[in-house]
Amino acid sequence: MAMICARHGIDLQSVQPMDFDLRNQELALCLARQDVPYPIDREKASAYFEAAKAGLPFDVGTLSDEAVDLGSFRNAQHYNRYTREEHLSWACLIAEQQKTKHRYACQEYLDGESIFEIGGSVIPDFYLLNARIYQQTSWQLATVSMIIPAELFFTCHSRRFFPVTTFMRAIEQDYLQEPDIGHDVAGHVATFTIPAVAHVMRNHGVARNLIYEERDRRLERATSEEARQCIQKRADELLLYAERIYWFTVEFGLVMQQGQVRAFGAGILSSPGETVFSVNSPKPTRLLIDPSLDTDLLRLATTDYLISEFQKTYFVMERFDLLETITPERIVATANLASKLPHFSWRDIAPGDRVLNVGESAISTNEKYLRLMSNQLCDDCLTRASIRNLRLIVHGLDPSIDLQTTWRGPIAAIPEGLIAWFRDEDASHRFLQATKPLSF
Image (tube, rainbow, N blue to C red; front, side, top):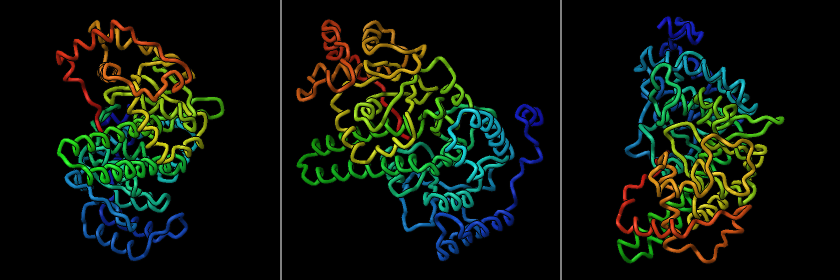
């Protein structure tokens, strides 16, 4: 442990959480505060404190009139069960995050971190953290056991709950696919204080409600099991496109500040390695976007990605306030249009893209199809986008959509010979095992 601490500049003696009584004393002082944007109702504060004092593990925040049913994904933070190694893992990650955040994060994010005192050398107690979050933003935490379905994830958002896991990654592990406390807390919590980001998060929750309310209306009129399955599949598909807008903004968003690219996405800033990679590396592509423009919002919704490695393309917003234009209604409308269009992979550069940096793995829109044909695909994202697009073309694009005017420039036509080849291969069921994206 001493060698690990030395590598990260950590005092091993500081990796020691406060005892139970001291944590409750601090919680009592926090709950009583009135000099905050959202003071806590005294009756709710009293019940909340009694639960903490009784030693009940934290599961879902109870400081508002809202509630959320997590079902089988419900979890709880048993704070006293964390080992010293897990606290040390937190301390190491925070030490490395702080080095990169203060160099590459946007100012709004850093201001948010200072409010919540994200840092230190021990894992935060969710009772205290949840109270502080509510007082500053009116959001709360809801502990989950694993990655949860997108429908539940955005249901939580619609009620201002943010799902958080309770496990901590291994010591000195920088990147992992499944979110842990290092991502959920040290990555996301500061973003709640940025009004534009908080609005986008909530708006995705409202968009989810709009999509599934329409689903429920259609299900009431359905007359067969086949029809019901199609209606459910359609709602899930629309939410997938909404997820992509969220992914490329809240999770992996970049923004221009004073002529420089800066990070605000929680997925970026929770990984010291990807923080540097997203802003400084020549390897990824960076595209400038204005989400108030329908074409740019559609570009996000139609861009597929993977969660298994650093992103191949990042979208850089011109400025923060443009996030305010991503309303629930626009999210739903964009998702509906995206469902009718060919999609891009995370490596594609499309005509009309405002390119800040061409990444080393960038490809033209047609290259993914040629790789599919020659068995030279390099990742599941290209496979998925290629098969989906070719199937869409084979079965006929919506004739009401003019692809030449949907984007800023015309997309190169796919060679007829390639389409004919795919029609035969797909008919032989070659592509039945095409991969599917994961939920949050």
